[in-house]
Length: 235
Image (cartoon, rainbow, N blue to C red; front, side, top):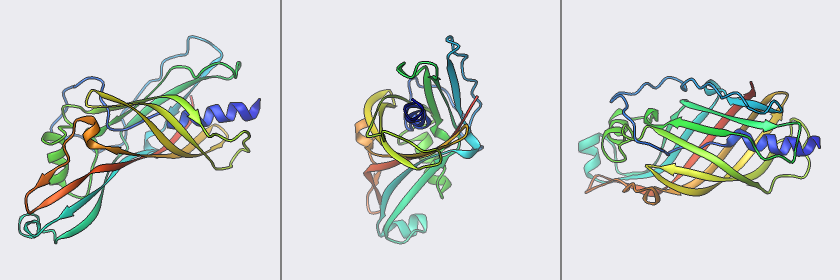
């Protein structure tokens, strides 16, 4: 029973995603890059459920994408021609999950995880501003959400402190487009603290985003990696 509880508990640490928005909402043109936004998890209606909450200061959400620069990039941007990997990241993560520890056959309780994607920051301010105000217009779609629906390939048993791998399936919404995605997860549990990393690969075009392309200057790949590093603690 303990091993089963730990498997369910581990699945809860990464019930989140990036690049999602259930509703367009106004956002500041120059968003803060400070760590995550505050979230108060709702009180479980069933006293058997306990709540685990993400620690934003110890968590990180990031996208990793390939860019290729051409001859005009040197004069326009001061960047020599060539291929580079670009990483945009933020700690503006909030989320929670409720687990029924009294009835291990019960489903996961209420859960929701959110990332403020218009705070994603790369190594160039001009890129970040373009992504927020033009292109994907993240200032118009500032929030990202992911809700998990299933776990697969989890180990049959677990020893506290051991690193385990499994897959987490759920609904990811980007710019009002919802897709089912699968994260590859590596996670561990120590006391009341959960830590893990989840990764998946997505296409911008699947979510209505046209990959940026500027003649003789640069192109951006359609495919990108989404990487989530999470620490969550029992509330």
